[in-house]
Length: 304
Image (cartoon, rainbow, N blue to C red; front, side):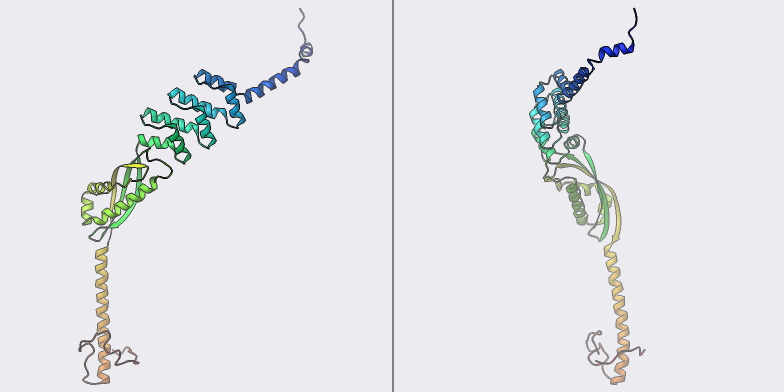
């Protein structure tokens, strides 16, 4: 039997080639516009999603996968979430996948997190997955060095670490976050240092010092619960009392030197002006003011 040549084969298929290309083009358009593969995946996972609903999502310029895939994940986890809720959240600018992931994590940890609350927190700018993770795993916040003076005038520089845990009931866009925790702990440390009788009391037992700060309930109206405050470093700074005493002593020395110099100069002028006159300052006058009216207009020069 003779083998047909290539030209013969091409001659046979050439009339139907345009029709075949047209069919392939139509199939590409249909599969691109009608997410048949996604619909089959949803039906296989037990999610009842109609093909017209997926076409409607496409017409509303919403990627069907952004609704169907989180819906499949929610149904597999047993979460009461509907496709309409996910679509509304997407239209509002949220991330349906993040909300469902956070709800699944919360469910496994026996934390009550309904879809409405999770969606509201996400739209308020809260990273809901990170918040749920912080409810399970507390976070450590570094407090930089805080400087304050104890009652004995010694400066103490204290550094601390604060362990906090997120509270979903307080978590919303208006509640204070980590910055408020840092500011309040710094304020509490300054107040505790100032209330200490001496710097030795803080150095001897920093644990009591941190416990006093923890008792002040610094997490009020914040999204966190403070679990512990640990003092990690205590440095001694300036001694304000000693410095003040030194400055006062130096001022007294300068005052005495100025007094002695003034007495010597005015004593010479008294002897020249009126022999036997009272020495400035001997009649109860202020030695700094004595003789200023008497010798007004005279320049006190280096006579000695």
